[in-house]
Amino acid sequence: MTKRKGENRTFRDRWETEYMFTYLKDRPVCLVCGANVSVPKEYNLRRHYETKHQDKYKDLDTTQRSQKVEEMKRGLVSQQNMFKKATAQNEAAVKASYIVAEEIAKSTRSFNEGEFIKKIMLKVCDQVCPEKKQAFSNVSLSRNTIAERICDLATNLHDQLMEKGKYFVSFSLAVDESTDASDTAQLSVFIRGVDSKMCVTEELLGFKSMHGTTTGKDIFEEVCKCVTEINLPWDKLVGLTTDGAPAMSGKKNGLVGRMREKMREENCAGELSVYHCIIHQESLCAKALKMEHVMTTVTQVVNFIRAKGLNHREFKSFLEEFGSEHTDVPYHTEVRWLSRGKVLNRFFELREEICQFLQSKGKDTAELQEQKFMCELAFLSDIASHLDALNLQLQGRGRIITEMYSSVKAFKAKLCLWENQLLQGNLGHFPCCQTINTQISTAVCAQFAEKLSVLGAEFNRRFGDFHGQKWRFELLSNPFAVDVEKAPTNIQMELIELQCDDTLKSKYDAVGAAQFPQYIPDTMPQLRTQAAQLLSMFGSTYLCEQLFSSMKMTKTSHRARLTDEHLRSIMKVASAQSLSPDTDELASKKRCQVSGLNTPC
Image 1 (tube, rainbow, N blue to C red):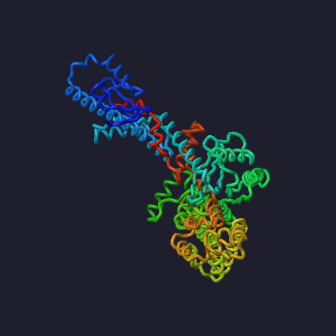
Image 2: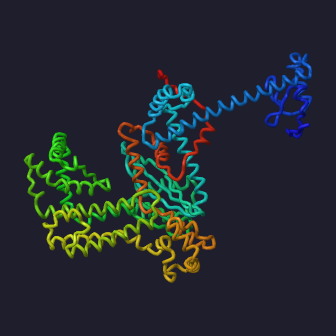
Image 3: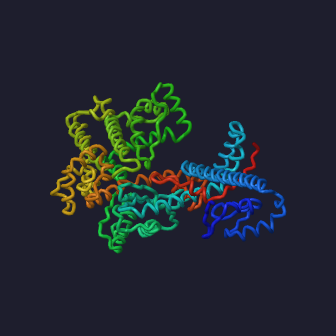
């Protein structure tokens, strides 16, 4: 006798043939009609059989009844498998709609693209696997469905971030603000959190639409909402990075001042480290060269060539006839970090062709042909290329603040080297200047060296706040070279133990500074805390700027009526990197709903 327990009673095998019941999912199920009996008592099963099925099966002998029971059990299993298969197909269709919705959000395309994708899928299916056409038809990709799916994905990511936030030992914020196509101010807040295992999570914390003013108070209130929405403790906040605007960096009424006041109200022991975006400051440093007159002339010439369609077409034809290596000259856009260097270098390379073209149009080219202007153009092109190279080094996700500052320090050292070389008439690192070296006198080299000196001084001034954190940066970048006597008292003992551990030194050499904090033992809690704080800090607002670029491609003049909720959800999904939406969980909670797409196939 096989014993199965349900409600503290035992189902007996003989009841299968006597009453045509089987035991399924902790309760007896009638093989004839599929009815469930909640309590497996023989009286209940016998009463059900005698009142509903006895007349039909009373003439069967024992062997026939056993055969009939086995036949019905096989039919029940087949029926269950059919339902499981249908459920699996429905979940697959829903999951597919989530996958398509995620790709639409990441590619900044409109919700209507789902219907277009379905049309293409069905036509491809007709040619490749027509027997699967119904399965593809079941994937709902209507406009409303895609919008709903993207909101679901964003909510799932938010819930995951909230769960991750419970384990953060430190976190930092990067905050920036911009306007969209409908002139609505959009505030982006990114978070970088580090847990006890030194794993870094870098995600969009909040994307807030601000329809009124954007004062320091307004921004502070929105940032506070972002922090409290996922229940982050204020005492874990260690860093804040902004674009340096007054509403952000104000020490009293700006975001920085109000955040520090909020931390004092919350009785937070640590001090908030505040940084002005490294990339933004690097771009501002270039203004110290004071060579706007060169850039203005270049911009005016480029605008003359490209502003009118006829001039632009004729210029491209002129370059083609001239056999030039390049086919056009790019526009200069101030808000694009690398635009200045690209325009200057292309202009310098096409300087002869541009002069000839302007002369053919009756324009005065005397300024362009002046030796002084040509030397300044060559120098500015070279230094802009060097600045662009630094800019590219500072860009990207997951950049550690110590690595970014190391790139800035390396550039300052290069400036000193170039200054000394120019004073000696050495143009080795200035390729554009080398092409016209006969026109560059010793006096001109000295003038350029002076400009590099001014540029170096501007770098020192703007990056003074980073220099003040030098000892902390060294603690992460190379803890084995830190002077123990200059380190804070609370970490000196642990630092000595670390520097004397040959095993940890070998691990540091093997994995590098970014991964090494994971291997600092728990017996060194102060060093682990310092490492976690540094790993969590943003060096720039690059992620915010990248998100705004995505926003401008998403909310265009053709989609200006996109709601705040939908825009927020799209940005959440499009910017996700450390986290991925759990489409399996989402699909299991949804019913398959075929989109009403009446398309002849």
